[in-house]
Image (tube, rainbow, N blue to C red; front, side, top):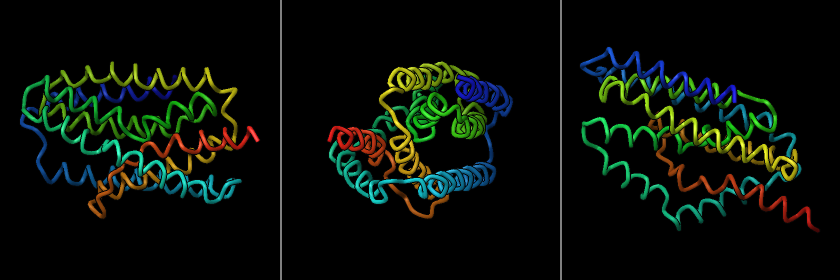
Length: 225
């Protein structure tokens, strides 16, 4: 839980800093911060793929995972549902801003993969990276919505804590191949997020999120034969 505690702490610290930026951050500063976040996400994603691809025993599984997961996500239309939900809270008061930031913090590859990596491999890289990203985001959002944004830290703690405990509980059923393939797919999604932040290519990352479950299911099924 060290990584999750760090993540939550960064949200709190970022919210406190942002609270003192009463008039909000200038657009040019928001732009450079977003570009920095995009570059960081791309580096993390590429690093995950490069490190784990040579260890893969199923070299085409990530392609199958992205295809199946993408089709499922598109069928459910996660991206549109998320965009509509965020649109409902696009006003300027605290309640609306808080609802939006909770969604932004919890629905993301780093926030999902991070607790799994921490529980199974004691690797906190994703959570530490996510904490830095969320901390910077908190500064920007709290400068607009106020200190109340800090309450989003509670949702992050419950969300990541739940994933961490689930991963611990089922760790006997999760093998190295599953985690390796999961990390490859997750790295690709993180890279896709970075491309979107840098405005290079807008990718419906949320519609691809079901891809994370495909390697686990397929490898489990293969192990039965």
